[in-house]
Image (cartoon, rainbow, N blue to C red; front, side, top):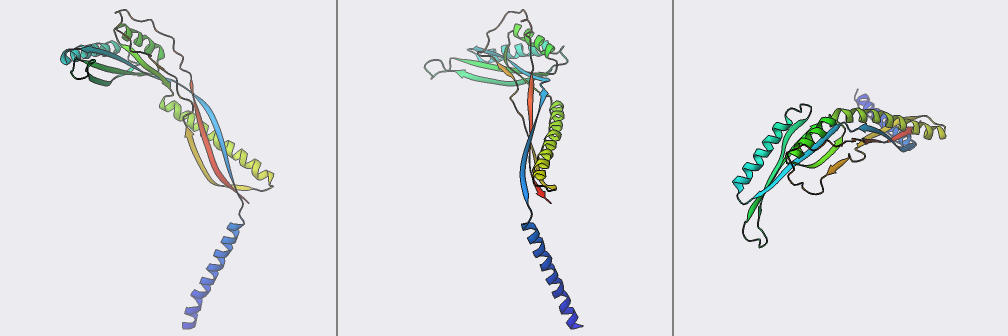
Length: 235
Protein backbone atom coordinates (compact mmCIF):
# COMPACT_ATOMS: atom_id res chain seq x y z
CA UNK A 1 0.00 0.00 0.00
CA UNK A 2 2.81 2.40 0.81
CA UNK A 3 4.57 1.60 -2.47
CA UNK A 4 1.45 2.32 -4.54
CA UNK A 5 0.85 5.57 -2.68
CA UNK A 6 4.31 6.84 -3.62
CA UNK A 7 4.34 5.73 -7.29
CA UNK A 8 0.95 7.00 -8.36
CA UNK A 9 1.68 10.71 -7.73
CA UNK A 10 5.07 10.26 -9.40
CA UNK A 11 3.46 8.76 -12.48
CA UNK A 12 0.94 11.59 -12.59
CA UNK A 13 3.78 14.07 -12.35
CA UNK A 14 5.65 12.45 -15.23
CA UNK A 15 2.50 12.49 -17.35
CA UNK A 16 1.86 16.15 -16.57
CA UNK A 17 5.40 17.06 -17.52
CA UNK A 18 5.09 15.17 -20.79
CA UNK A 19 1.85 16.91 -21.65
CA UNK A 20 3.40 20.29 -20.80
CA UNK A 21 6.38 19.57 -23.03
CA UNK A 22 4.11 18.52 -25.88
CA UNK A 23 2.05 21.71 -25.49
CA UNK A 24 5.23 23.80 -25.48
CA UNK A 25 6.48 22.07 -28.63
CA UNK A 26 3.11 22.56 -30.29
CA UNK A 27 3.15 26.22 -29.33
CA UNK A 28 6.63 26.62 -30.80
CA UNK A 29 5.41 25.16 -34.09
CA UNK A 30 2.36 27.49 -34.22
CA UNK A 31 2.45 30.02 -37.06
CA UNK A 32 0.73 33.32 -36.40
CA UNK A 33 0.17 36.31 -38.68
CA UNK A 34 -0.58 39.85 -37.56
CA UNK A 35 -3.03 41.75 -39.72
CA UNK A 36 -4.88 45.07 -39.72
CA UNK A 37 -7.87 46.44 -41.58
CA UNK A 38 -9.75 49.74 -41.73
CA UNK A 39 -13.25 50.86 -42.67
CA UNK A 40 -14.77 54.31 -43.11
CA UNK A 41 -18.30 55.67 -43.15
CA UNK A 42 -19.77 59.14 -43.32
CA UNK A 43 -22.15 60.34 -40.62
CA UNK A 44 -24.41 63.34 -41.26
CA UNK A 45 -23.79 66.36 -39.06
CA UNK A 46 -27.37 66.54 -37.84
CA UNK A 47 -26.63 68.49 -34.65
CA UNK A 48 -25.63 72.16 -34.52
CA UNK A 49 -24.11 74.00 -31.55
CA UNK A 50 -23.75 77.75 -31.60
CA UNK A 51 -22.44 80.30 -29.12
CA UNK A 52 -23.68 83.88 -29.11
CA UNK A 53 -22.30 86.49 -26.75
CA UNK A 54 -22.51 90.06 -25.57
CA UNK A 55 -19.56 92.19 -24.45
CA UNK A 56 -19.64 95.57 -22.81
CA UNK A 57 -17.61 97.99 -20.73
CA UNK A 58 -18.37 100.59 -18.09
CA UNK A 59 -16.57 102.55 -15.45
CA UNK A 60 -18.85 101.07 -12.78
CA UNK A 61 -19.06 97.30 -12.43
CA UNK A 62 -22.61 97.18 -10.96
CA UNK A 63 -23.95 99.21 -13.87
CA UNK A 64 -22.14 97.00 -16.37
CA UNK A 65 -23.41 93.78 -14.75
CA UNK A 66 -26.97 95.11 -14.69
CA UNK A 67 -26.87 96.05 -18.38
CA UNK A 68 -25.33 92.76 -19.54
CA UNK A 69 -27.63 90.63 -17.38
CA UNK A 70 -30.73 92.43 -18.63
CA UNK A 71 -29.63 91.97 -22.25
CA UNK A 72 -28.99 88.25 -21.71
CA UNK A 73 -32.36 87.82 -20.01
CA UNK A 74 -34.00 89.45 -23.04
CA UNK A 75 -32.03 87.13 -25.32
CA UNK A 76 -33.23 84.05 -23.41
CA UNK A 77 -36.81 85.32 -23.65
CA UNK A 78 -36.33 85.87 -27.38
CA UNK A 79 -35.12 82.26 -27.78
CA UNK A 80 -37.87 80.70 -25.66
CA UNK A 81 -40.48 80.38 -28.48
CA UNK A 82 -37.96 78.31 -30.47
CA UNK A 83 -38.77 75.05 -28.74
CA UNK A 84 -36.62 73.02 -31.15
CA UNK A 85 -33.53 74.90 -29.95
CA UNK A 86 -32.06 73.97 -26.58
CA UNK A 87 -30.83 77.15 -24.88
CA UNK A 88 -28.57 77.43 -21.86
CA UNK A 89 -26.32 80.04 -20.30
CA UNK A 90 -22.65 79.77 -21.17
CA UNK A 91 -19.66 81.35 -19.50
CA UNK A 92 -19.59 84.84 -18.01
CA UNK A 93 -16.29 86.65 -17.55
CA UNK A 94 -15.48 89.97 -15.94
CA UNK A 95 -12.10 91.68 -15.98
CA UNK A 96 -10.66 95.04 -15.00
CA UNK A 97 -9.45 97.60 -17.51
CA UNK A 98 -6.24 99.17 -16.22
CA UNK A 99 -5.87 101.57 -19.12
CA UNK A 100 -2.50 102.53 -20.51
CA UNK A 101 -0.61 103.08 -17.28
CA UNK A 102 -1.55 99.63 -15.89
CA UNK A 103 -1.59 100.81 -12.30
CA UNK A 104 -5.16 101.97 -11.72
CA UNK A 105 -8.48 100.42 -12.64
CA UNK A 106 -10.16 102.74 -15.11
CA UNK A 107 -13.16 100.58 -15.89
CA UNK A 108 -14.57 97.10 -16.30
CA UNK A 109 -15.32 94.73 -19.16
CA UNK A 110 -17.78 91.87 -19.14
CA UNK A 111 -18.65 89.07 -21.55
CA UNK A 112 -21.61 86.72 -21.23
CA UNK A 113 -22.46 83.78 -23.51
CA UNK A 114 -25.54 81.84 -24.56
CA UNK A 115 -25.21 78.31 -25.97
CA UNK A 116 -27.73 77.04 -28.55
CA UNK A 117 -28.10 73.40 -29.62
CA UNK A 118 -30.54 71.94 -32.12
CA UNK A 119 -31.14 69.64 -35.07
CA UNK A 120 -33.31 72.26 -36.74
CA UNK A 121 -30.78 74.38 -38.62
CA UNK A 122 -33.48 76.59 -40.16
CA UNK A 123 -34.78 77.53 -36.70
CA UNK A 124 -31.23 78.07 -35.46
CA UNK A 125 -30.36 80.36 -38.36
CA UNK A 126 -33.50 82.41 -37.81
CA UNK A 127 -32.91 82.68 -34.07
CA UNK A 128 -29.27 83.70 -34.52
CA UNK A 129 -30.43 86.43 -36.87
CA UNK A 130 -32.84 87.79 -34.26
CA UNK A 131 -30.23 87.60 -31.50
CA UNK A 132 -27.73 89.46 -33.65
CA UNK A 133 -30.37 92.07 -34.33
CA UNK A 134 -30.83 92.52 -30.58
CA UNK A 135 -27.15 93.28 -30.07
CA UNK A 136 -25.53 89.86 -29.54
CA UNK A 137 -22.70 88.54 -31.71
CA UNK A 138 -22.12 85.05 -33.08
CA UNK A 139 -19.04 83.55 -31.44
CA UNK A 140 -18.92 80.19 -33.20
CA UNK A 141 -21.11 77.52 -34.72
CA UNK A 142 -20.14 73.85 -35.10
CA UNK A 143 -21.84 70.90 -36.77
CA UNK A 144 -21.44 67.29 -35.68
CA UNK A 145 -23.35 64.00 -35.60
CA UNK A 146 -25.88 63.63 -32.80
CA UNK A 147 -24.88 60.94 -30.25
CA UNK A 148 -27.33 58.35 -31.59
CA UNK A 149 -26.35 59.15 -35.19
CA UNK A 150 -22.68 58.71 -34.39
CA UNK A 151 -23.30 55.44 -32.51
CA UNK A 152 -25.23 53.97 -35.46
CA UNK A 153 -22.45 54.97 -37.87
CA UNK A 154 -19.78 53.54 -35.56
CA UNK A 155 -21.63 50.22 -35.16
CA UNK A 156 -22.03 49.88 -38.92
CA UNK A 157 -18.38 50.76 -39.48
CA UNK A 158 -17.25 48.17 -36.92
CA UNK A 159 -19.11 45.49 -38.90
CA UNK A 160 -17.41 46.68 -42.09
CA UNK A 161 -13.96 46.73 -40.48
CA UNK A 162 -14.28 43.21 -39.04
CA UNK A 163 -15.49 41.94 -42.42
CA UNK A 164 -12.45 43.58 -44.03
CA UNK A 165 -10.18 41.90 -41.46
CA UNK A 166 -11.69 38.49 -42.14
CA UNK A 167 -11.30 39.01 -45.90
CA UNK A 168 -7.63 39.88 -45.41
CA UNK A 169 -7.16 36.84 -43.17
CA UNK A 170 -8.74 34.63 -45.86
CA UNK A 171 -6.25 35.97 -48.41
CA UNK A 172 -3.23 35.49 -46.14
CA UNK A 173 -4.11 31.98 -45.03
CA UNK A 174 -5.24 30.97 -48.52
CA UNK A 175 -1.91 32.07 -49.98
CA UNK A 176 -0.23 29.57 -47.64
CA UNK A 177 -2.80 26.86 -48.26
CA UNK A 178 -3.80 26.77 -44.61
CA UNK A 179 -6.90 27.22 -42.52
CA UNK A 180 -6.88 29.65 -39.61
CA UNK A 181 -8.56 30.82 -36.48
CA UNK A 182 -8.66 34.36 -35.08
CA UNK A 183 -6.45 34.45 -32.01
CA UNK A 184 -6.72 38.12 -31.00
CA UNK A 185 -8.69 41.15 -32.16
CA UNK A 186 -8.61 44.83 -31.18
CA UNK A 187 -11.16 47.36 -32.44
CA UNK A 188 -10.64 51.13 -32.15
CA UNK A 189 -12.74 54.05 -33.38
CA UNK A 190 -11.52 57.44 -34.54
CA UNK A 191 -13.51 60.63 -34.95
CA UNK A 192 -12.21 61.29 -38.44
CA UNK A 193 -12.40 64.80 -39.87
CA UNK A 194 -13.14 67.74 -37.61
CA UNK A 195 -16.74 68.95 -37.88
CA UNK A 196 -17.22 72.28 -39.64
CA UNK A 197 -16.88 75.26 -37.31
CA UNK A 198 -17.27 78.95 -37.94
CA UNK A 199 -16.02 81.75 -35.73
CA UNK A 200 -16.35 85.50 -35.74
CA UNK A 201 -13.05 87.15 -36.63
CA UNK A 202 -13.73 90.04 -34.22
CA UNK A 203 -16.44 90.75 -31.63
CA UNK A 204 -19.36 92.41 -33.34
CA UNK A 205 -20.56 95.80 -32.22
CA UNK A 206 -24.16 96.32 -31.17
CA UNK A 207 -26.54 96.19 -34.13
CA UNK A 208 -29.88 97.75 -34.83
CA UNK A 209 -33.08 96.31 -33.45
CA UNK A 210 -33.91 94.82 -36.84
CA UNK A 211 -33.25 91.09 -37.14
CA UNK A 212 -30.37 90.03 -39.35
CA UNK A 213 -31.59 87.91 -42.31
CA UNK A 214 -31.01 84.17 -41.73
CA UNK A 215 -27.85 82.83 -43.35
CA UNK A 216 -27.84 79.58 -45.35
CA UNK A 217 -26.28 76.70 -43.41
CA UNK A 218 -24.59 73.64 -44.92
CA UNK A 219 -23.94 71.08 -42.18
CA UNK A 220 -21.85 68.56 -44.14
CA UNK A 221 -20.68 65.18 -42.83
CA UNK A 222 -18.13 63.74 -40.42
CA UNK A 223 -15.92 60.79 -41.25
CA UNK A 224 -16.04 57.78 -38.89
CA UNK A 225 -13.01 55.48 -39.04
CA UNK A 226 -12.68 52.06 -37.37
CA UNK A 227 -9.36 50.21 -37.19
CA UNK A 228 -9.12 46.48 -36.51
CA UNK A 229 -5.80 44.94 -35.49
CA UNK A 230 -5.46 41.27 -34.74
CA UNK A 231 -3.60 38.02 -34.97
CA UNK A 232 -4.59 34.82 -36.74
CA UNK A 233 -3.21 31.35 -36.06
CA UNK A 234 -2.66 29.01 -39.00
CA UNK A 235 -3.87 25.44 -38.57
